[in-house]
Image 1: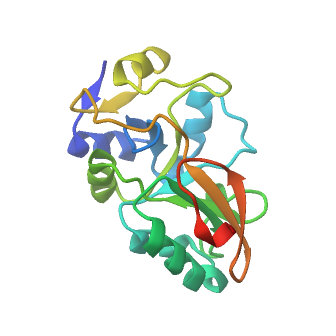
Image 2: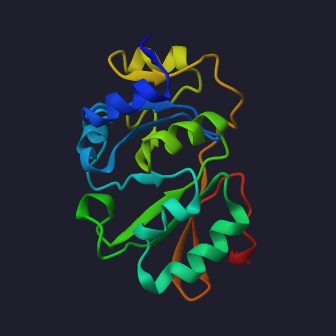
Length: 193
């Protein structure tokens, strides 16, 4: 198993390779945004499925949000982050196309995990997905994940702290205060009801 600390992880990410790290939900595989294709290759993921941009603080992600959605983004982010909520929101026109889905939205999240936040403070926002081969159930331990991704460096130390083992709740913003549930997770979002 290739264990690394946050500083070494940054060097790996800058070289264009991904890192696997724990979050409060499921372990993630992440890369710097300019190297987004690498996650699709490692996971064997359909390139039409967007990735999630994770940051350590909501102010680090605000530049990725379209001007028309910034106020509602700040409102939801301040209530539910850090935590197991992914917000799908209109993407800023200034950001590159590899960060957004076909409908010009972007999924954003701040995990409630000390290790994840330490990494993200060092690296800046990372494009992420769950650390599993697409279509297969993922593991929650570094040891098991290293079997699926033997060449990918893993953030240590291990064992990692406890995580929920469930995917995050995903909500999508349509307009004004109108949110739609995309995936149910552990977070109950009052604005949906």
